[in-house]
Picture 1 (cartoon, chains in turn purple, yellow):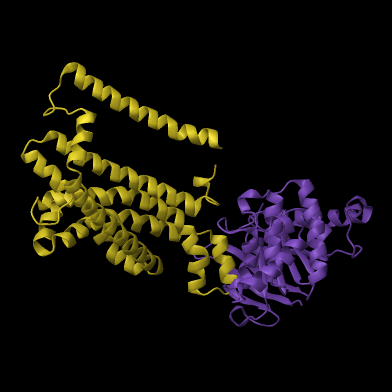
Picture 2 (tube, rainbow over the protein chains, first blue to last red):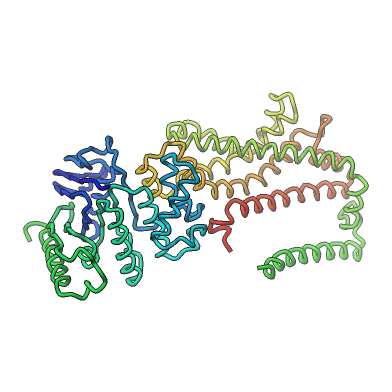
Length: 258
Length: 259
């Protein structure tokens, strides 16, 4: 199950006058894994929130499966930069929360949550409280919560930015495996060129401010990404192309007349 | 765990005992007369000899204190929830709450005693006025300090208002509510005693404050101390009970109770 995402000439101005996104047009195919890459403050997170329907565009259209935010039926999930677990609930109940909100009874919700936790390798920590987990484990639980509803759209806002490199690499691989299983449309916000290239089929490079699309670069690498890929020349080539686009964005983002 | 925990009980108990022994010793060695400062042993004996009448008064004071505390808890939480739902309501009513809070209860008590026929009801109202503000303001802050990301998550999943309250707002507010309750517990006792002083010793049903007033009219200093001991014990009991409640409700997850 996956959904198509389309942004057409989207502007987003906040009440305080900040122009976060300007004339952004993006089309994401169902089941694609897309990264939004850009320097901090370029409106990446705003784009994610627009897709989620947590923000409304000031101009233009944001459509998921052809529907505007209010009419949406497609199930969406969101993974934040922080694990954002409820500290008063066990890991199991945290993961079961989206199902409970959908009025699924406690027992079947917990059974599904247990399966989702097993999929991220946390089966034995289901009864633990979030404070008892490491940073990587918390993020795994957060991903399990996002996937427990089998979403059509999976939105991830720099989920691994706060983790150490070793954990981040491992979670990259785990995320890819889970994405392949469920095949939602995934939009992944990051400021790491390597992470974007490693994970995605399409990298959207953004520049600021206000946030604009600098380049959309398809990643033509083997579909089965393995850690060995990080050492191969095609990978480095892709990273270079993406990094150059990022650089261009920085330059063109400079004030005019200089 | 048991080692430090035992020490945490042992040290204050030993210090308390030492203070009592020193008090006893000073009174005896200096020959201080009981109408100036009674020894702890005399206070204990007075307490024992007047146990029946003091117990009745004690129960009455406890009734007022806990009645007011329950009202404060219910009223404070309800009002905070209403304020959390409506800023307009908050702007309209919060000044009243503040006015009640900052006006000394001894200044309001005589009026309430005139307006309200039943002394018990009047005392309840006074103790409630003193006790409810910490619950109200703390709960309100708690309801407003839920993690914004979790708020977004519930919006994304289409949670109803009730689900949001049940799964996010109420648990987020709980540590704040408990902190408010710890303050309100002591204040309810203060309110109950102070209001009774304002009421005077009149009426059939009277609490510990009336016993203290009576004893002071007759310069029965040991009896004053005996009643005072019960008031202090009540306060300590409320403090310990609210700490136990805090451990029970927050112990498994909140940083304030984690060891």
